[in-house]
Each structure stands twice: as C-alpha cells, then as structure tokens.
Image 1: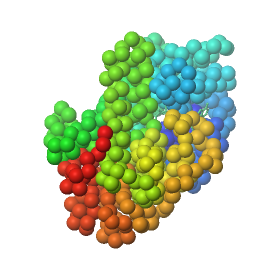
Image 2: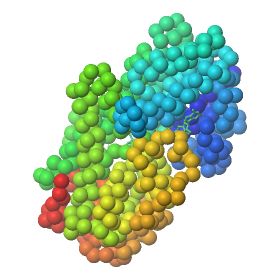
Image 3: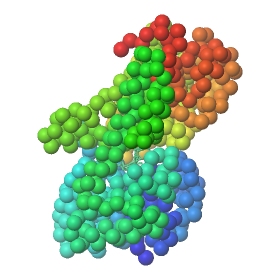
Image 4: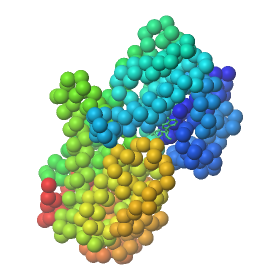
Length: 480
Ligand code: NAD
Ligand code: UDX
C-alpha cells in the first residue's frame, strides 16, 4: 500500500488529501499539522473549513484510509510520498518585505523531512512557491546525506475555494514538474499513477520543475489581471454611462477571450492572488526585469484603487461623512460559499469606513465575530502565519458589532454595503429593510447582486459597481 503524508492540514492540504483518499482506496493518506486545534477539528463533526461537499468526502474515508494527526514526524517517516502544503506568506520584514515569499515554514518542513527520514521519498511541492524553490529544497533535503534519496516534484494546486471538491474531482489539469533524469521521470510517473485513478490521462500535464512552479504564479496572475481589467473598465463605465455587465458580456462573447472571470467587483480577495502576484513581481525584480515587475504590479494597484473608490463613493454619497452613522455590511468572506476571510476586500472597505468614524454592523453567514475582530485588528500579511490559528488577543474594534441576521444588521442603518455575493442577499425582503432604515436609505452593491431598479422603486438610493449612476450619485461625485 502506497503511503502518502501531507504536511499542512489547511484549505489545500485537507480537501486535496481527502479527495485522494476517496479516489484511491489502496492509498493510505495521513494529513499532519502543527496546529492542535486544526487537527482536532478535522477529527470532529465540525471541520475547520467550510467547503461544499467536503464533509461528505471526509466522512466516507476518515478512519479508513484517511487520517489527521499532529504526529508529524511519525507519518513523514513512514510515507513514500510527502506533500508539503504549508503556508508561504508574504515576508513582513527584512529583504523583500511586502513582496517576497517567506519560506520559513517550507524550510522547516524540509529540514524535518531530512532529519526524520529512514527511507527514500518523493517530496511534492503543493504550496505555491517562487520559481527555483525546488533547487533550494533539494539542497536542504540532502544536507545531512544519510544516503537516503529524495526526488522533488512540483505539483501546484489550482482549486478555488467554494468549489474545491468539484475542482478536485474534475480538474482542468493536474500539473506535475520533475527533474529530467531517469529518477525524476520515475517519480513523476509514481505521482501521475495516483492522479490517474480518476483524472483522464490527457489532463495530467508533465513539465520540468521550473515550468510547473512558474505556471502556478502565471495562472493566478492572469486570472487576477482579468478582474483588474474589468474593474478598471467599471470606473470608466460609471464615468460614461456604460454598463459594465453589458461590456463584460459583449467582450466575453469573443471566443478568444471567453466569458469567465469577468465580473466586476469591489476587488478581488483571497489568500492567493495578491500574495502570488507580489511574489511574481519580486522574482522579476530579482531577475533584472523591472518593466515586467511594473506590469504585474498594476494588477494590484487597480485592485487597491477599486476598494478605495468604493469607500470614497460611500462617504461622498452620504454627505461627505459617515461619522457615527450606522453602516450595515452584508458579507465579509472574500467570496460566497466559503468562510475564508484572508485578504477579503471587506477588510479594507471596513477599515476605510472606520477611518471615517462609521459604526459598522456586520453580517456574514459563515464568518464568526472572533474572526472579523481578528481581521480588523491584525497587521497586513500577519494572517498567513500559523500564529493566526492561535487564540486571538483581546483587542477589539468597539465601533464594530457582528450580528447573525441581515435584518438585524440593517435595522436603523443609514446605508448597506454588500461585499460578498451570498445568494441569500438576493432574496432579502428589501421593503421590510427599507422601512426599518434611516432615510435617505442607501445601498452600495460591491458585487452587483441586487436588482437595483427594484430597490430604487422601493425608495433606496443605489450604487452598483460599474453601472450607470442615478441622479443622487451624479450630484455627489466621489472624490479621488
Ligand atoms: P492554510 O494556512 O490553510 O494551511 C497551511 C497549514 O500548514 C496550517 O494549518 C499550518 O498550521 C500548517 N503548517 C505550517 N507550517 C507547518 C509545519 N512546519 N509543519 C506542519 N504544519 C505546518 O494555507 P492553504 O490555504 O492551505 O495554503 C497552503 C499553500 O497552498 C500556500 O502556499 C498557498 O499559496 C497554496 N494554495 C492555496 C490555495 C487556496 O485556495 N487556499 C490554492 C492553491 C494553492
Ligand atoms: C484562486 C484561483 O482561482 C485558483 O485557481 C487558485 O488555486 C487559488 O486562487 P480563490 O482565491 O479560491 O482561487 O477564488 P477565486 O474564485 O479565484 O476568486 C478570487 C477573488 O476574485 C474573489 O474575491 C472573487 O470574488 C473575485 N472575483 C472572481 C471577481 O471579483 N470577479 C470575478 O469575475 C471572479
């Protein structure tokens, strides 16, 4: 029986390994982590992450060929294939701070693998890492040369949160990069054999190590670039009276462009896009390519601009101040169908409103008060360190209350901000909400989920990203 161990029981390690266990009954999979609360949750009925379909997969395999454990060394020692799916955050200090990937967690995992191993192993980079990381990892793995052979592979993960199980069941592609040597090819084949148990052969791509590492950064950069492109257009739409949904539809009908990933929004969030583009920018700079670095930096600049523009629009529409006004924030997760708040645009929007002294009442069906307070008090980039899994400090933002109902959040509010596209927001009784709000009542839709015309008929003043502005908003132009 092939034994797999995955270091890191997070959003990638947990679902990916659960699906491997389900699809490969003859493989034994152990997912290990240094975080005791995370592993306890994986072994309970309340999994540590919310992902549609995940509970079902875990229930089918846990205790059979899928195990969650904090005994990292034991499972690594016993494994034939070790996946490493630990955090690769943006560095917060020192050389490359604010851009470069911090490989501290990766390096400590690699050192531990080298130290505890007593048999040959294939070590798989599952985390997103800078190009050429495999070279550094190889050096670490062989540092105490006990005669054990390690083959390193790059197998980046392309799943998106909220659809992780679907994506893992039917991936567009699985990418495996390895050394172009007989041992390298054999290792690639061993991993390919695992995926081939459910992924069609033509969807399993094999490349050299550096192409696989770079393809992951490139794919995320291309996806984020589409969103920044449509968001840049949304600003121009508002200025000219064009409608961004109509523009996106018309543009996406070109089969060379395609319709996906062209929804204008308050900005992209999530743990990957910003981090991976900053990483790409840093690699370009280190390789003497400042023009290329500058090009990709713009994707992030437009994303920041979109969030600032949204806050400015709220403040300017509400008579240039939100001081002491109650703003209901509907949605805090970075997208629907996840409780994940890493780099969610809601953090920057809420901080912007708090900076103007607003009182916020926040509702998200999947995000807890503890998480929201933690996000609003944490320093930039600190979220991606395992420390974020520890109990939070008692600091809280007093102007923020977190409620468990959209009606409670909007009661007596001056304005509503929609920051996540949860389906339930489309079905709210806006007549009832309007009655219970201060007047004039505003809706700022950062996801274009509500029917603006219907809301205007009820009496709301509505701002929808990239849509023609109503007279009120034209009369109160947002300051840059
Ligand atoms: P995560 O924070 O959810 O999980 C990482 C886990 O690794 C944590 O539970 C942490 O405690 C654990 N860990 C850190 N160092 C460890 C060590 N030395 N030993 C044992 N456990 C350790 O992160 P994630 O979202 O799963 O992302 C992991 C990697 O995958 C990152 O490189 C990320 O860029 C990449 N990735 C993420 C996604 C996504 O959608 N979240 C998608 C593709 C790729
Ligand atoms: C992304 C990549 O899609 C995935 O392949 C990679 O493995 C990890 O990073 P994820 O961050 O989970 O996945 O979600 P994704 O669906 O890509 O959305 C990212 C952000 O972009 C979200 O905030 C989402 O709301 C936003 N978005 C997405 C838009 O604003 N408009 C769109 O058209 C699509």
